[in-house]
Length: 529
Ligand SMILES: Cc1cc2nc3c(=O)[nH]c(=O)nc-3n(C[C@H](O)[C@H](O)[C@H](O)COP(=O)(O)OP(=O)(O)OC[C@H]3O[C@@H](n4cnc5c(N)ncnc54)[C@H](O)[C@@H]3O)c2cc1C
Ligand SMILES: *[C@@H]1O[C@H](CO)[C@@H](O)[C@H](O)[C@H]1NC(C)=O
Ligand SMILES: *[C@@H]1O[C@H](CO)[C@@H](O)[C@H](O)[C@H]1NC(C)=O
Ligand SMILES: *[C@@H]1O[C@H](CO)[C@@H](O)[C@H](O)[C@H]1NC(C)=O
Ligand SMILES: *[C@@H]1O[C@H](CO)[C@@H](O)[C@H](O)[C@H]1NC(C)=O
Ligand SMILES: *[C@@H]1O[C@H](CO)[C@@H](O)[C@H](O)[C@H]1NC(C)=O
Image (cartoon, rainbow, N blue to C red; front, side):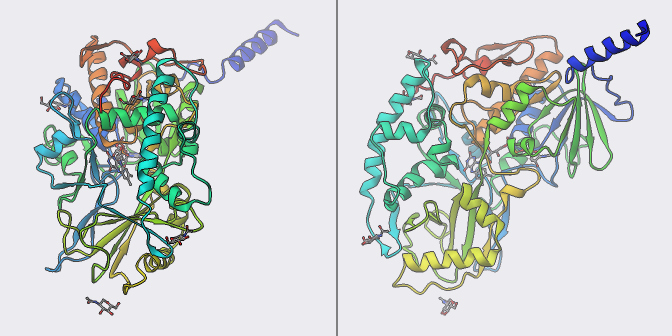
């Protein structure tokens, strides 16, 4: 073999060995719009990141948003008609402010709800009647059985976290605390769905015990257990639009609506974002706020491909689907002063289980609007089938629940298809079992100049709107500090350089890693209910 050939072969093989880590060709963004920070997505996280930048006097940013409006998964629509012939406003996505807070720890979303005088009403979870296929039947005592076990389970989860023991499924954790509903005890299954699946959009089998409980503690013990349902004619997104107006002028050229990013090129020196319409942005940093659903569906190409630790984190986290199906009738045939109606299907767990009345005082009285929520496999099924098919199934259920009433055809009927929305691919994330804080940190961590934020990157408030707000703020402040060559200081914690990530994951996370640097600023076991 000639020396030259040998050298070539050696060089060739060394490139092979480094596949994936090959020095990327320098980014060519010379034809693109230049900016300091590209914010990808105009939901709650994107807007709070932009506001944090603006607060830090960094005004040179661009927000790229797929849709024709800000708000993302906070999304309302017109529905039905009121007595004057005008439509009602319903929330297809986020609907509650969850945990309002006290003076010591306020949910930032509650602060915004007050600032914009968002109309809302407290959800009364005791205002519930229980049903099965024979009609009204009182199995409400099962709620107390579940609650007692849940309290024991909660302490156990706290011990597992603090003693750095192995996580388990919420199913195992609940069973060890004595909650073991039989597969054919459909009333108990309905009560369990109401308590677990409804919030996490996944079953106890597919949820982390430790982080499921810690997440509930951090929202409902820290901010209080009140949930207020938003019923504002401007839509819940009025708080996001309102905050955006604190730093965007009308028709601000920094807001690019109707812009679908399709390729993100990143390096240690900058980021170039290419869009479906041929436009592109070249930035010093980018903050990607796309949902885990969007990231998992590989509809946006990353160049170079994301490193294995990041790709693993994206595939390991879970994206749920939570579908609210809305009906308006010409009459309120259900008890007018009750908020919730729980249905236990005789055969299928999670089959149209929770009906919610908007016709009740404090919501949209006189509207005759009722909606039912499904999650996971029942949501996928409903989202695949026609409105007509779903309507028939629900009317059958309602006729079982109210055998003595005339249940008419609805006069309006609609529901979103979250699982296939190309800008969301699902509703919100959930923490799967056996997933450590370090693995979650890999979902948050930046890759070179490309940063990530959103509800799913929130270790403490994943799934919630306030999680998206906190993560947007943290990321905006962090990037602003890097641009000034400084460390950020947020709630008394110094954030310097890039975020940590873990190339090698272990079975558990060491206790001294439960810090703000891994997204864990508050001790979940010492927040008091
Ligand atoms: C049905 C449902 C019910 C919910 N209920 C509640 C609730 O009651 N209370 C609560 O606190 N939370 C609730 N949530 C969760 C809450 O809505 C989310 O946590 C929050 O809105 C997420 O904000 P985000 O900024 O992280 O993501 P998003 O809102 O998804 O923002 C990301 C943005 O990126 C855009 N985007 C995506 N792909 C691209 C692309 N290729 N190019 C450009 N832009 C793109 C999207 O259009 C979107 O605007 C609910 C969510 C759903 C769907
Ligand atoms: C920006 O500053 C305003 C005014 O102090 C504050 O209300 C807001 O919460 C800040 N935004 C973020 C994301 O930190
Ligand atoms: C949740 O809060 C309860 C009550 O304060 C506590 O006993 C438990 O340890 C906490 N669990 C976790 C996982 O944070
Ligand atoms: C439904 O409730 C009725 C009345 O309480 C009861 O007789 C029946 O067994 C219940 N159905 C199921 C499937 O448990
Ligand atoms: C509602 O519509 C049904 C037909 O679907 C009709 O029989 C009934 O009288 C109507 N009720 C009211 C209150 O208008
Ligand atoms: C949380 O606080 C408890 C009690 O003060 C302590 O024992 C535990 O180690 C702390 N947990 C973490 C994760 O810091």
